[in-house]
Structure formats: structure tokens, C-alpha cells
Image 1 (cartoon, helix red, strand yellow):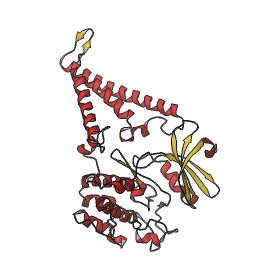
Image 2 (cartoon, rainbow, N blue to C red):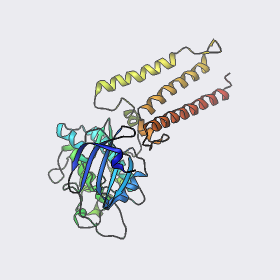
Image 3 (cartoon, rainbow, N blue to C red):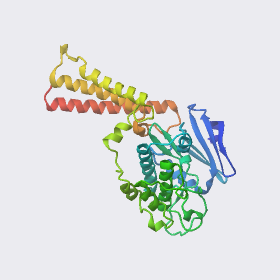
Image 4 (cartoon, helix red, strand yellow):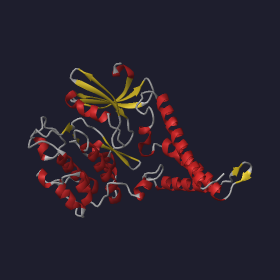
Length: 354
């Protein structure tokens, strides 16, 4: 089926001689998507990305080739870019580090793919930011690293963010993205490119090394860069809490209300009167019933709010039919609740609770 016949164009977001990006609506599920019409020079990148679900970039749903171009249908993320945010406000340092660490994790996922994907255009305007989460997008000039080559076929990149080798001085590789990450960190901290002014704090040393003109003098990996920033790759308990639905956004009132909501759920569940066979349950029996009730409510909240992109792992998540997606989420929810029930039942058996 021709993609153009399935999706109705609502708005042209960007158009030039190289590409056309449009907001479209599907005639099948009536949801909004982003349609990207670009040259087929890096179609392999989009095919590669479509096979990997990641919480760090928009999901690729469909790819169709037409002569010398491809049309990509991807997830529509209704959120401002970091560039939009920086135009209106400065970002607190603590939040900068959180944002930057997420971008680093996104780029690290790309570099760990087989073959490695080099983004080559990391900059604030290519990063969405919503509810404390970042989404790296625009892979139109991305490429696979090829060991046997010593130069890029095409000279591409954004001035100020692109490493020198992207302008004909060598082949872009993971160090090229690390260069752009160094520039990004500086811009997030003081809203200036490193060639204008470099942040004076401890992070300035990291920025200087990451943006060294010689790729060999830069960080060898994202992990090494994060280590110098004292950022652990795995989420801490604080970071996990920060990401819970309703928490971690920029609105303090919303965070407060969400926190009150979680506390009330906890109080409600563990103060509920539980009867078993007409008799008021007490002790460990009551505790297990209440724990299961709490687990059920929290599971529904987390899956319904797509916590940590859990819906990407539900059945039929890649389907173009909304009814199938909803059915897959419900089926996934039932499976999780069944496993939780089995867990509680196992504890009851172990403690011989009748």
C-alpha cells in the first residue's frame, strides 16, 4: 500500500531541496505521525533504527522507497526542542546534567549498534524535551562507521557542532559525536558555543577535551566522558523516582499533587479492610492482600502512563491499528497482573497462609 494514500498531510514543518517533513494523520488509526521525505543515501540507517525500539528516539513505523528518495513514517512527539527552551530560559545546572546524561545514553546506544551509527548532527534543535525525558531525532545525515574508509563520502554537519573531520578532514566516527556532545554541554550550561566562551566550572575541562580538534585527543567513548562528569550510566533511586508519572517535570504544583496522589494510594491500600471467607483478615494475610492491591493500582498507572516507554514492549506495539495496540496493552497488563498474583500466592504458600 502506498504510504501517501494512507496518511493525510496536515502541515509542512520543514521543506528544502534535500527533504520535506510533514505532520500527517493516518486514515487507519487517525493518530498523528511525522512523515519524512529524504534522499535514499542513508536509507540503511532508517531500516536499522526501525528494527530497534529505544526510549531515546522516535519509533520508526514505516519506510517506503520511491525512485531516489525514501518516505519514513515515525512517531510524532509533541514537545519543544532544547533550542526552543534555551530561547526563553536558562536551564539549572542540575537539570542540564540530567538532560546531558540522557543524550549521552542515546548516542551510546547508537554507537553500540551493529554496525555503529554515527549521528553527526547532535544539537539542541534536534533534541525534544518533555516531562524530564529527551528524544534525539533527525538521522537524515547519520551514517554507519566503516573501518576501511578514511573520509566521509559527503561533507555534512551543522557549523559550530560538527567536528572538523566532518568537513573533509577525515572520516566521522564516535569521536565526532563526542565533539558535538562537548559543544552541546557548553551550550546547555551558558548558551554559548565553545569558540565563544567555555564554561568555567569543572565541566569546562570535560568540554575542552571533548571538543579537541584532534579526534585522538578526545574521549574514546561515551562511558569515559560520563566518568569524568561523575555520572553513572545506570539510574540511581533518585533518578528513578524523578521519572515516575507526574514527577520530574518543571511544574512544582504538579509534582506536589502527584506526590500526594502516590501517598494517598499507599495509605488507602494499606488501611483497607480485607475480608477472607467472610472473616476480617489480619496479620500477614491482610498485608499480602493489601500489597497485591497496591501492586495492581501502580501497575495500571505505570502502564497507562507509558512509564519508561513500557508500551513499546507490549504486544502489537508496532501495529498501525489503534484497536490492536490497545488490545496488546490490555493483554500485557493482564499478564503482569497474573505474574504478580502468582508471586503473592507463592509467598502465601511458603508461609502456609490459608
